Length: 122
Image (spheres, rainbow, N blue to C red):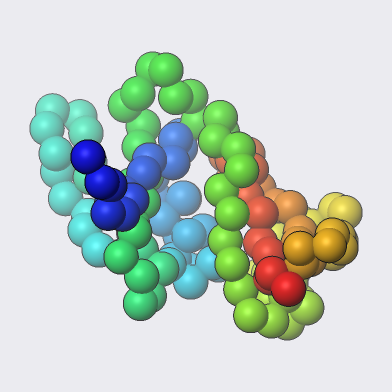
């Protein structure tokens, strides 16, 4: 059973509109779909331009409360420039850029407190 890729994963949020604004307007994701999914549910799917994997902003999983995601790692080419841009856009980055033998990174949170890592690998 060879698995060929990760198609999508879910990010638990409280307010899909606020999260959509953050992931698209601040982080640069693009909107793939935004449509009704069933009674009281909405399918909001995003991707990073040029990639296959996408994310859904979900509100309906009781086992995944808003803000419970940790360790979503996003790769970038210009960490300093991207951190400066994120700060200009109002993102709080408390610890600054951290260095490790494998690369450098910062930690940040989305509007619900989901833990994100922006990194550039060596």
